[in-house]
Length: 188
Image (cartoon, rainbow, N blue to C red; front, side, top):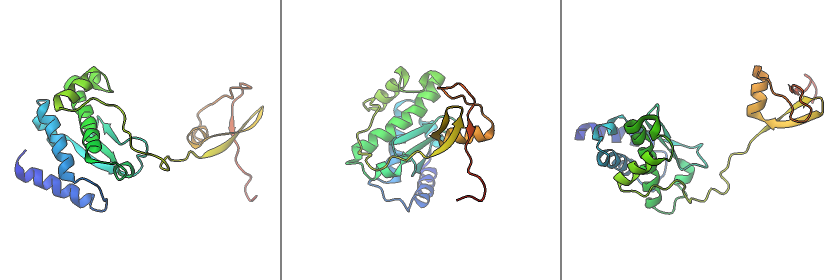
């Protein structure tokens, strides 16, 4: 990648993420991704990898999207990280997911042998989990009511919405089809 293209990519990212306060810069993140690509023998793949900040990631420090060549990083966890080493490992971790998928296909997905080799080639320990404190960040599941022959029950909104769309679910107790329990119109 030419210096001009690199600087343009960096400027575009900084403009998009300027509202986020982070302990390391976009240049730091791009540099780690570039080094991972180069150490695994695919320096041109760096041009195809994108990264974004995600405010909704509250359990995972990062996430790799294979089809989009996208690395997502958690804003809430990023701001809680104790040092740059945690983020360096996380960024390399996600970049190596994309690299192992590119190099080895479906065999390279997950935290298996090929991902570990990719991490080691990049010079990082192949660790799966972060140790950032997530207290108070977990998103709360919302519930809605359904009814079957044995009475009303609460289910997660995801299941409730599927029932509304026509998916069929059976009660594990009475083995009858469940129905959404919708409040009568006009009642409060």
